[in-house]
Length: 144
Image 1 (cartoon, helix red, strand yellow):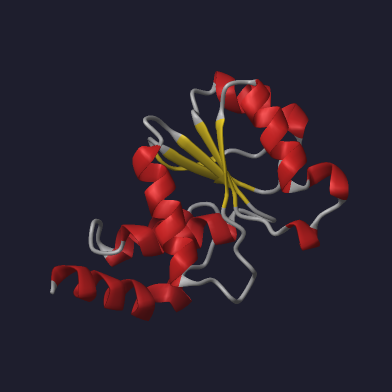
Image 2 (image 1 turned 45 degrees about the vertical axis):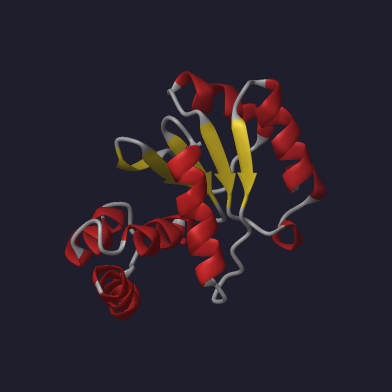
């Protein structure tokens, strides 16, 4: 598992396995968000398998599949709402961690400076610069 903390209460990573979940819980995370559609992965990593393993450890599990290149505002809203009700640190995963970073940045638009929302994920190799116009537009909509 390659844990990449974007903030003190939100981390992303590439695809995990059920065997990674005890370490995620031990690291203090209380919620796991799966941003990977089942169609991309083998059956042993599908949402029901991961959900059962997470919940057996007492972790809250949320499925919010983000289709590469087709992220929606519903994905952003679902991620933000899940984080808001988590009651503690949240761990999100997808194929590389990029989609989990994108939904975080878009959800944080207007709450943090755009440069930070792009720069923080960049420390882990995620290029969110193409999202700058969308982040700025969402921030403006929240301000107005």
